[in-house]
Length: 135
Image (cartoon, rainbow, N blue to C red; front, side, top):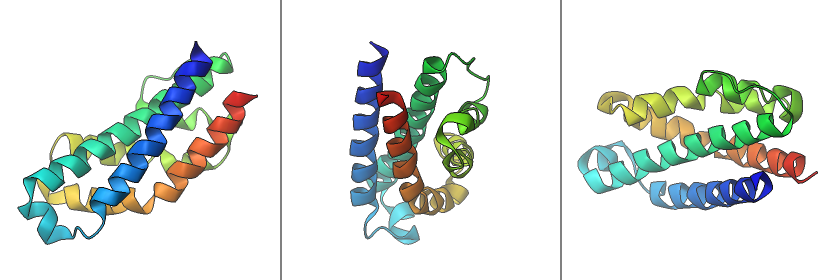
């Protein structure tokens, strides 16, 4: 069951990253603030991506018979032993998720830009996890 759940999570992550990037294309700060629909799509996508990363990290820890830490950030960092330094690039995204989901509008655009710049790291995390959990 865990293997199937992990495949589902990784597929969802791939899909959501692609969706986020396509919806963020051409959006600048002015459009983000002016267009509530675009803003909601981008904010929700960030939330989905980061929560999915956390769920994948939890699956990684369960597979390796490790306890799941109390915080999202620590959960991702706890995978360092299995996935490597990529977790150091992924863990700070939790802060951006928390700020975005709590709708601190003035800094949300900065979070969009930051998370968008980390999509290569998100994809690398997914690929390393995919290999680890397949074995």
